[in-house]
Length: 327
Image 1 (cartoon, rainbow, N blue to C red):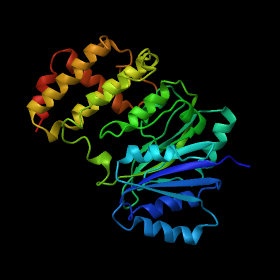
Image 2: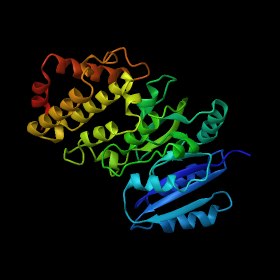
Image 3: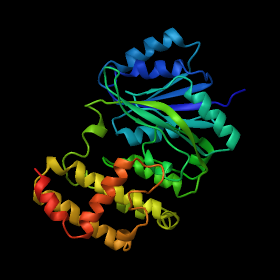
Image 4: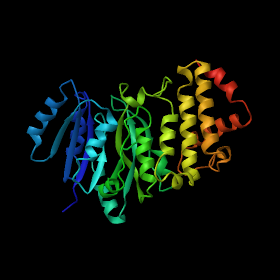
């Protein structure tokens, strides 16, 4: 008997997308599934659509719908974790889909290698079906940090529950916190070097709106401070690749918000971020992965951007660049 896999889907007003999501699960070549839909206080017809769909396919699908007051995606995922029955669990967002057949491959590899996490690549897909971005993971240490979303991964349920790993109900970084918390317990992570997840380029999604304007809730510092409070933070902090990941995230945050905010706001954000690094990673400017040739497994474009930005910062020209390119 193939082990049961619990698939957790947070749902909030997803009537336009949820059936495509469920269809991608029905079409998997792996049938032993428990689908847990967490309705986070939807006000549209999402549940009606799911119920009609389930009536049609109840012989092939097990769907458990759990209703709760609106609490956000992190809280919904936590509710899902608290209700899993499978040997493995995975997360999928309501507007995304799985590539047909990927689940069978992920379970087979997890069983063969006794993995705690199996990660696959993803593709960013426009609403008309055009592929905009493809990210394929290589079998390198950096691949743990390349995709920090909780989706496109299969988790051993026992590992997650034993270590009491949960999401935080925050605007920015709940995904990062979940994964870094997992990594602090040193899981066995393995990779499928192929695309397994279709991430819809949905303009209404949280990922497309969170970072554009800076404010208290969208600052990186609450996330970074929460990471500093992790039980096993010292294990993470000994890993210079983890440090590089935090640097990369900081640079990305500054650049992404640059054209949406005025110079004073962007400068203040930059000063606060790098002050935090000075306090917690005093040697961060000499991180060995800040190179065009490293880390192995990262795209050349991203390596170049991080190296270039940190070089500009090192020679004292960061503020000039922020002034030129800010709103």
